Image (cartoon, rainbow, N blue to C red):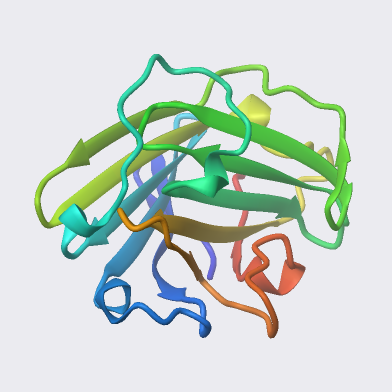
Length: 193
């Protein structure tokens, strides 16, 4: 999928995530997760919309926004971004609590030292049948792309039930255990120029 110009904004994607085939909870399988990506004024905005029986979910309580590790162990929304034909990529985690994380990798799961220059802005609204999380990634936090190649984007979500069970949602699941880092899951293509 490529970008569609919308004035000063560009729509990157409007896609739905699918649960991993190993998911056994029929209640979780009833959920719908849609994601809309938009590039606007130099920032990448991702809007995750979860519809279903939200009361089933364990949702982290609101906290002061800060960078925090291990967010994926609970309900969390994620994005993986790489430059086309390059092994390096970045991972971004967004919690409904307002906490966030950003990581850089040289290659598949080979983490390198890097810190986001700007905090990722997160806004979350929850009702009985919907959770909407909007996250904004500043342009300076995207992977370096001096040759202005296309980006590859993978979108994913972890849902935790109140019983403590985790389900894994993505645009595409490679065979085997859930693996959001697998490059075959970076199914969307976009260019910010």
